[in-house]
Amino acid sequence: MGHPKKLNFTKAAIEDLPVPATGRDTYNDLGVDGLSLVVYPSGTKTFHLIKKLKRSNKTIKPKLGKFGEIDVETARKMALKMLSTVAQGEDPDETYRQLKGEPTLGEVFDLYIKEYAQHHCATSKDMVVNFERYYGLWRNRHVSTIKRAEVQSRVNELGRDHGHHTANRSLDDLRAAVSWGIKYGYIKCENPAVGISRFKTQSRERFIKPEEMSKFFDGLKAEKNIAFRDYVYLSLFTGARQANVLAMRWDQIDFDLGTWRIPKTKSGRSHLIPLTNQALDVLLERRDNNSDWVFPSDSATGHFVEPKNAWRKLLKLTGLVDLRMHDLRRTLGSYMAMNNQSLHMIGRVLGHSSPASTQIYSRLANDPVRQAMESAQSQMMAMAGLLPHKRKPRVLKRVK
Image (cartoon, rainbow, N blue to C red; front, top):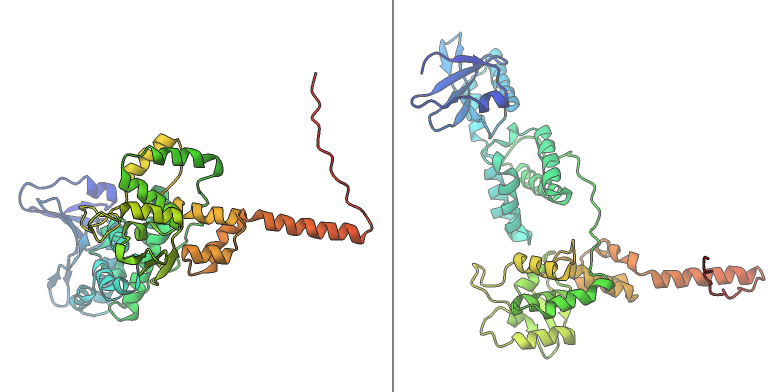
């Protein structure tokens, strides 16, 4: 193994370190006395605090964490904190034992999902996938070692690489899990996900516009994948969320009353959707599929999963751009607004739990606003004794 080598710890310098064929190599940091890095033949690089205590002539070698799970700055802060306990005459081993007794971020998150989220959050499965995807790198770190600056840096990175909405949602999940762990005493530290700057996002307004509708339906008529075609029709005709349409069951459909009862929506409540003649026609054609599901498949769930490839092919065929499957739900709400239906009515159809969710459709309900403005203007002119003149049609002069 040889004697430890001196090295100024930086991310680049550590990444460039050679991997020993046998044994292990030890490097001492030039920045913090006692902070060491041990490199193993497997390629694993682990931070340690290696310090000989003068009063007891005892050498302590607590493990701080693996490089990649904690960065150089965090390792230095942990080492300095432990050295501070030594200077104050405290037992550094006790400090290390306390740190070891603290659950990791991954352990806290797993408890949060098991004890709370899966019983109260309809999107708990997505939360698990997104945690591993966006914060899995920190799974084995103690929560107290994760700094607010690290979280902010990670959120900024997610916003750049995956979009502002994804960054905000992942931050919300992280903050909720840690807050839950603090509330119930699993961890005793500040929440590093609190006080993080979020991205300003604008509600998505995309829907199938009138000039696109003919192309869209022509593409559906030519669709050979009948299950996918019917899924799109029902998404458009019911305005239901994608997950609910995919998991639609026959025992939820009442053909006599013409209704579809969704037992649990995103808000955690049931929702009753009236089925129009167009929706019922689609369901009646699919009725003899000998399955509990309206859209059965051989997937792990037993029903249709998000048909991304089929959707991409449909968009390519129709020439429509920037259109997502969720926009089918928004399309129904948009056309209801353009037909002067109240926001309350739109919210009831779409199953919104908050009026704020429906407010986006107010921009399309222009006719009542225009009529109200014209009525007020006519009243002002009448009170002024002015008779409104009929506008003559504009005649465009031909340019010679």
